[in-house]
Amino acid sequence: MPRTDTAVRADRVDAAGVADTAARTVPDPDPGPPAPTKRRPAGRSKAGWVLPPVAALGLVFLYPLALVVWQSFTPEDGGHSTAPYAAVLAEASFRDALANTVLIAVGATVGALALGLVLALVIAFVPFPGGRALSRFIDIFLAFPSFLITLALLFLYGTAGMANGLWTDVTGAASGPLDFLRTPWGVLLAEITYFTPFVMRPLLAAFSQVETGQLEAAAALGARPWRIIRKVILPEALPSLAAGGALVLVLCLNEFGIVLFTGAKDVVTLPMLVYTKAILDGDYTGACVVAVVNIALSVALYALYRTVVARTAPRSGSRTGGVRRRAGA
Image (tube, rainbow, N blue to C red; front, side, top):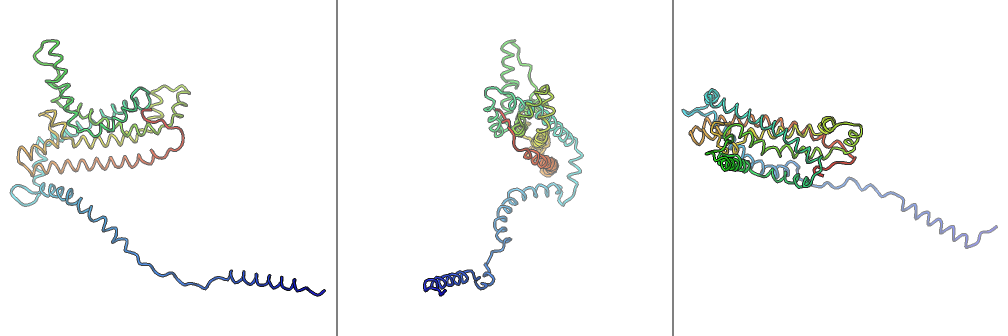
């Protein structure tokens, strides 16, 4: 049967559409590699940002520190030797200052850990009015200078303080019974009072990560509060407790204002010995020797602190999910 003109035209239209589609699907010729772009050297751009702060750090901190170390090896008769170290390390005053520094720092750290742990447990897990405000006050307390706490203790327990004044008013005595702030015990009390919040802050952060479900399950099984603290809470808070203790130990080792403001003349620590040799005796070389020893102890303890913090971070961030108890809630 012969085909009509309409059918022929339809076939031609279909063929044209197929050809047009094929032409569109043919890939374009290879454009070749992209034009290279100019990039600035990464090392040059980074050096431009790094060099100014490094130079400022070296000028403000490293250069004076290098001068102190250099002066510690310079005897009064000139030259450079280790004779100043031999002379200072052989002095009984240096050994006493070193012993006082270590004993007071360790005692203050232990006291701050014990008191900070108890107070943090109360704030975090014992609901009471004002608990959240007290938790916020701890952050503000960290900004207080150390001598301010010492002055407050002097106003309360000093020889002319409120407690002795009340005693003399009631009994008619010439003086009060409290005169311990000028002793090592007074320095220890002042440092424990001042550095306890430095332990409480990381502990409160750790306690906020404890799941309430664990506490409720332990209580439902009949565990007493002390057992819950020992088995559930302390394992979570132990890294933060160690980090806070290491930080307090470093700070107590370098504390100067508390010892000075208590007026404890018989309590000489390494920072006080530096002050005595440099300002009162004019022995700058001996002061630099004591300062270098103090810096070495501080750096060693700071390395310990950073190690503890590094081990704490993964554990504190490893727990996810669950209902958390917020500190002071």
